[in-house]
Image 1 (cartoon, helix red, strand yellow):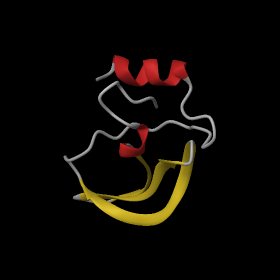
Image 2 (cartoon, helix red, strand yellow; image 1 turned 180 degrees about the vertical axis):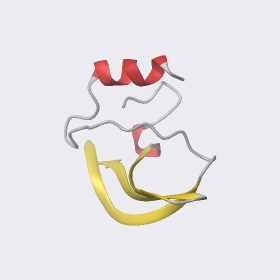
Image 3 (cartoon, rainbow, N blue to C red; image 1 turned 135 degrees about the horizontal axis):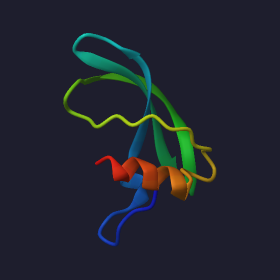
Length: 76
């Protein structure tokens, strides 16, 4: 994940979906800090309909592969 010129990567958050309930997603938060993606150590819930959820694997130190991002953005 790379920020555009008017953004900073630290503004982005990634969530791992833990469970899907009737009206919300229970998620685990990751954020970009000190030059790499890190487990923020927090969990929460997000109301369904407020996020676009894409499932993909990534390595916290190197981010998401370009080919994976291209595949995701093809469906937006």
